[in-house]
Image 1 (tube, rainbow, N blue to C red):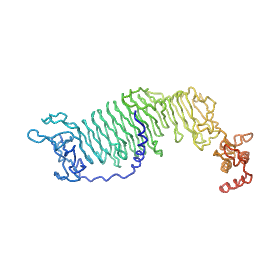
Image 2 (cartoon, rainbow, N blue to C red):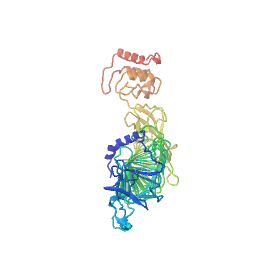
Image 3 (cartoon, rainbow, N blue to C red):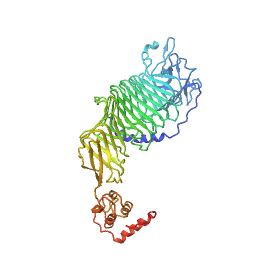
Image 4 (tube, rainbow, N blue to C red):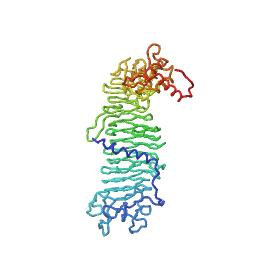
Length: 618
């Protein structure tokens, strides 16, 4: 199975790539309107194939690559340009790479030896339909000669851009260091056939392939992998400047990369579709950043998408800044999605389950047997975790860890998928549901809303945001459902569950009539009497907290006040005496209380820093 070590090593590249989104594009060369394609040679001799001068074939003519002045003069910046006058055969235009210096005689004249790996510095396809065929003449007798074609390929050491249509086919590799599809004109690339590979170099400093133009133009980009073709590389970005589409169709067709971002820039749409046995294998995938809409669709039997981490809707694990991006994952018709470590579903994210399955905590790596997944079910397996707000249309089964937001409280909706799933939630004895409480209000806690039946077991974990002081009187509804079965194994109805940091505990209620689970009656666990800020020392800051909440809920004092007799449950003057008699004590010690004069000076100093409050007496 793939190692996650690469993830840690390459994580810096993602941060750099995001930063480069705002960087101005490189200078775009000015080209004559008649030019359809430009091959910029890497050195004297223009376009090279193996060790000779490159040649081309367009179904009717063959020649070496033309230089800008249509001469054979060699200059250091040789460029081969194709235009309408040079290529007379119309669309599609076939360019078959061969070695001009290894041509052979045929029928009384020179002929063409196909094959070989061409090397260019830059490739600019400006318009028209093109086909790069790496083994077009797989029959050595095509020219009436016995010349075995060499292995085909094209290496672009610099930048490649496509506006127009490019088809790659035949047994060969198209290698680009950095590429853009849809630059200053709609662009489309098709990789077709087993043995045909587009290798997007994983050594580029930022994104290796932009689909939908990488530099702010308004032109669409599309890439299609079919009939067993392969696209592989480092980072692939969709819709950084225009709408985009990625289609992977048919058994053996695949995309293999380190990272795939579907939807990058505002108001743009990016759609990646895998069907009929196509495959996706990446370490990280992100859907919908920067106010874009990113959609991943996995459809059809034997169609598989596998990744170690998936973030859906508006942010990523590396970039938690708020934005309005929308992400959608659709799994249907036998499709299967495997997320090895964590799936992060954010507020504007949605998972639509059709007759396909999704597993978190499992990674599929061929040739391992392909596991079966129940249709319409998102299944969390140990040790996987789903960190989620947003919406799931399907059933949710938790055997691992379900976290209802690890940043801010939010709501996860589990809804029905018509004809497939009722929108049920099931937690097994091994499962763990984690909710976040971030304030004293009724809406300051995470919530799970289940349209169908919620069947409970396993553990309930309550995380209290640091510095939060829930009120005794507040009731937090953390689960709503159509019907409720059983309870969490670690807390029965009316029992108490401690917070994860052991700061305090909540009473847990299961209401069969409303099919809801609630947290209420929060109580801090006492630590140091008089330490109302719970920072390990009784000092002036505790007096300030007492002064600001006289008459309020006793939980403002962190469970460390006088809760006896008439002072129970309320902040009052008895709590002042409780603090004053312990002033200067430290947690874990029995320090002698400070003299009354020191206490008075602390109060005066505190009041002096808050003169706008007016005079108050203890």
